Image 1 (cartoon, rainbow, N blue to C red):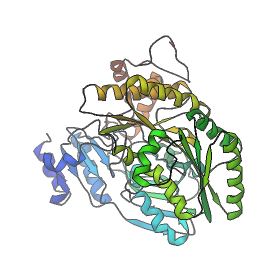
Image 2: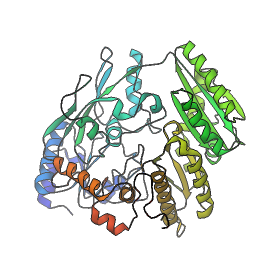
Image 3: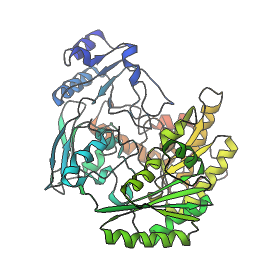
Image 4: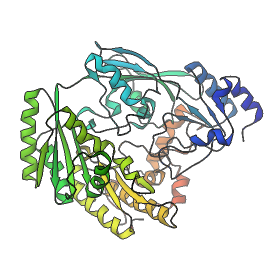
Length: 484
């Protein structure tokens, strides 16, 4: 419980309806998209502008009250999980698109602006914002920056970090800071890259300048079906190996397509073990040439059937299934756990085969939906939280997948962040010295560790409590030990 004097001071900063303290009012903020973990915050505050954010943070810093910044709450790593004795600082009211400059091809937006809204606003100028998470109709730009979000088209156009020019934010002390520049480069250390993906541990974002790109004149997508999961995985590497960089290269296995098809009716072949969606964009001539190359590579890779979108409506329909995979799986299972790991493309066949084997061992269905082109996996483990033991086995299954990602030379996250979910995985990914250096960066921005504490980077004591083994540089130091 917060000190009444502190609560009164908080209430003096924002209008009465913008401060929530009752359990009934704060309940909607008890978790983000990762529902495995829940916690009621002591208070939720919804400021109207940056000046109020400054005053709130100054107050929390002086009283040593922890603060968790929250956007749309679509995070899948528990990044916005509240602290029981802390304040949730919601940026939901920061929804202005401040400006769109077609000459510099940039947009200045507040952190609560929806991802898709940026492209919708820029469309009149023939421009779009490239990073497009599956949750783009709901997720906010501030959260995208905090998690360094990816998306279907990030293989060709880059992650959030490659599409942001400048970030304005407020430190926990109330100091206003800017990272990056309106120019193409900025002097000094690249702190813009540091704050992008920092998961709310370093500053509260209040404004973002994003890069806009010319909308391609034409885009077409190839739907390829495979009778074998490993063949589909190998075909992904073959496409990139042929020198083709598609606008998007996504993969879904049979459990995923069978969940998606009744939901969106995209015409996916339900007898296929896996499907690939490969998009070509550019001028009509470039697209025609690239589609021919893609067809040739996929046929040689064992595709049993190929379908090329005939028009824009069909292209969007084919992509709609991939975009709707998460809610589609939610229709067929009481609960699901979305894993987010990244591996080298060459390891796809091995990793997919192992996930399939573990799914049988644990007795938990698993649908694979992921950004195959950049090796970003999203296995969806289906379970029932009301069934004794299901949640524990699901978490163990997920941990093994992430440790396998490390073992083959990958990482425990690609775009969802660490949050609270992958704290154990950080102990496996990094040696103690690296973790301590991460904490050194945190202290440089937030000496009292008040911003989103307990997330992102575990303490060495916490790693010892987990008892996690360490996997470094893609090799197990003790390969005889079980991978639990």
